[in-house]
Amino acid sequence: MSYRRRISMYDRARRLLNRDVIIVLRDGREVEGVILHVNNRCLVLRICRGSVFLRVKIPLDRIREIIPAYDEE
Picture 1: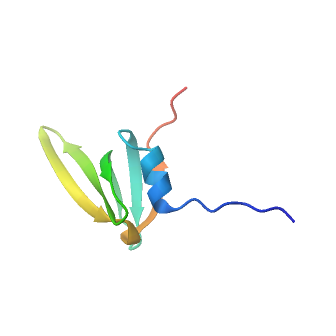
Picture 2: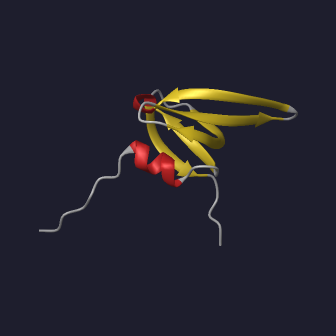
């Protein structure tokens, strides 16, 4: 029987700090941006729409999944 460590949302967000990500929220919505800051309760995401830059604070318990926006090769 193999043991597989479950990675917490905090660990996943820390690994992807300062990278483009797609965040899937628990209600099914998707948000694309760059993770600027992570603490044990929330993360701060920078979203760019044209010439408008927004900083959004998202509680970690509202996030279903964090996916890298593209793979760097």
